[in-house]
Image (cartoon, rainbow, N blue to C red; front, side, top):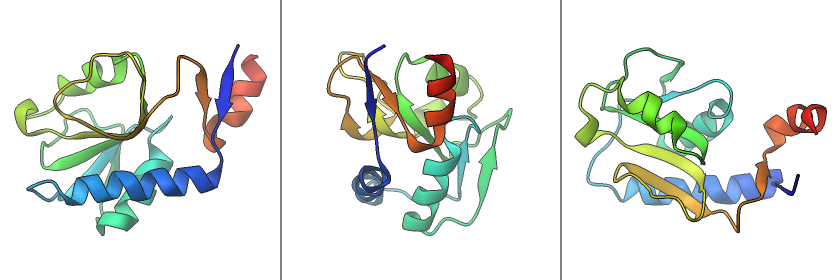
Length: 134
């Protein structure tokens, strides 16, 4: 499988870019909500940049006042699953480090960078899992 490894320097750069975009939004967030498998580490880094103290993981109900953070918008499956759990989907923000090039993006998506192509993005936190499965 073709893959693109992302290092910590690029992660820090993407977090800075994403945080800058989020700070320009005409709103603030009371917390961050994320999923444990891909979003936990980016959520923690974004929380520091935005000075958000509360991070909720794997919640069944999500407040639209909470910023949702994931590592990549890829197939759109996570977004579809999450949006049905949000109290006010029109006021919801879904933030990711990467957005898969060639996909249709929801209006709620804010991302730092598009992927170069269709290769699999390997983040530092999922490198071992990737190596085990390939």
